[in-house]
Length: 144
Image (cartoon, rainbow, N blue to C red):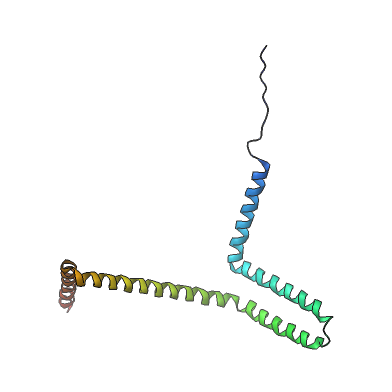
């Protein structure tokens, strides 16, 4: 006599599912850390940890007022950073755009140098450049 056994096996391994969820949460945390809010949270956690370490050391130092002054100065500095975070983001974006334009200009100059070096060794390329410059000059003259 033949009997068939049908066992309901899961299609996904629970460990793989947990690993995928962990990878997704790490990816999400990385994306949040890149944003301004994530950077602010990272800065805030750094400040809190620094203050905790400083508070732990205040009890062991004999001149606690110096430590208190140090904490106050850094608190003011981090508060100033927090207040200017939005404008600093704009400055960072403009610097990034300016660096991109500078890199593009350098690439274009390098390509022009490479083309000029090729034109110095190949008469056909030099003739093409000459014709292009002549047509540009003729077009400029017609504009007057």
